[in-house]
Length: 394
Image (cartoon, rainbow, N blue to C red; front, side):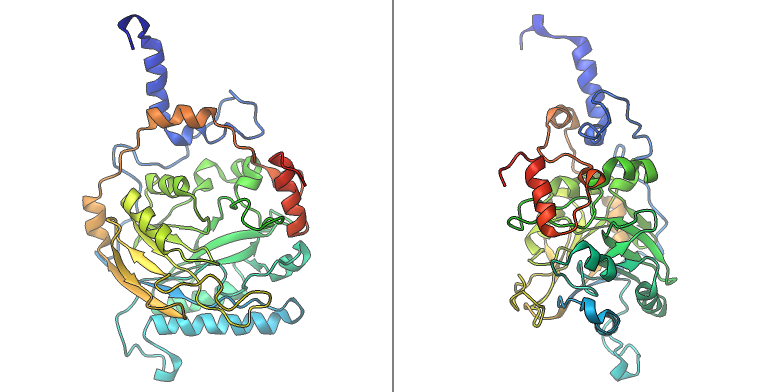
């Protein structure tokens, strides 16, 4: 650039974009008119390497990632099949804590775990249910199922993280793909909606669970911008949980908001590679917890996308510090020196002044708020919505 073309005002504008950062363009494709003022002041994001935390209760934590089966409940026998799956989950939690019922419920093997992580659908499983069926399958939060999980969390004095389909009273007929973290007092400490669904992965269909992106304007109106990518600031570290696959920019934004541990819980395939990449590129701990081989899940082959070493716990250098040894039900364990990490953490510098102008001008084919216009009853209807909004032929 020649000296004659230098524009101080333009430099100030770009500097402003850098200060606002990537979060500053978050609403540019919503229903609100472009150019309208957006208030992002509630977003808790790191500034000069400093971010919001809760006081740690201990310097290091023990983490387990449970690689379990996917076995879908039967809509026509919902109570019994849900109970069977929940009993299986409880058994695996006891195993992770080294305290199965067969040993009298006492810990006789290994150390106490402070955080137990499970995948996206350990209790309900997955089927291409209709909305009517899925609404029956979905949990209330809190509800009987979370009370059972909460009892185990309180008994062991630990946090338990898992995914589920959930109902929310303020969102009638919606079913939310929810990540839940239960605390050592037995209560839910964080409910984290899935940020968005990946598109084009299911042939002519698409997922019908409601995500933040699909109801963005109303969601922000109700909960604020900070809740779109939430962080649970607990006394064992800042924890984010996501069932969004192949979304490195979302993982990066969670890290920029202060996530120290990112739990990645996508079912149907290995999370190991994504977890390694997310840990290395964002300099955080990740838990990539996937499903095991899953026999007797109607409509799906037993493999269910499971892979050997498909569940991992990864340190900020991208080094695997815990992993499953096979594709069957298994538990990965690792110790995270959370206090030392927090004290020595160095954020990966993001050149926001370079990136923000590109994101501000980019327009995705699939805009937010699709489920505010129409709530699809089936996966086929959801696929039609996706194709229509992306300008694709039927």
